[in-house]
Length: 116
Image 1 (spheres, rainbow, N blue to C red):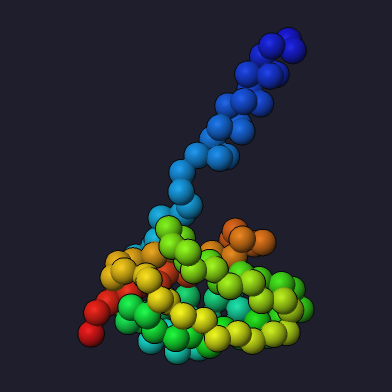
Image 2 (image 1 turned 90 degrees about the horizontal axis):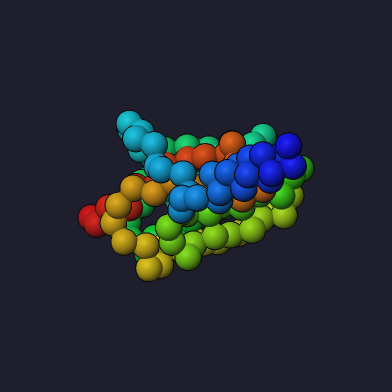
């Protein structure tokens, strides 16, 4: 019984730790990512487009800390509740990326980086 439990636990841990993050969802009509609001456990807009190296204004207008984390890149901004930040997509190559909040994995967006 204990051996089965240990094996089950290892399988659950292995599944939970595998992968490099969520796949970006396809989105239609992306909005230029000049300003992104983090509010009520959602990114607004949730379908973004930007040029490589673009600057972003991030506004956490809620009462909960959030992150703006672009998966598969070094871009991650930690925003305490009620704060704003200026961010850069410096070093982000053209492509489609999942954006998440590390504190709230249900918070997702899709960022498309395109050369203009």
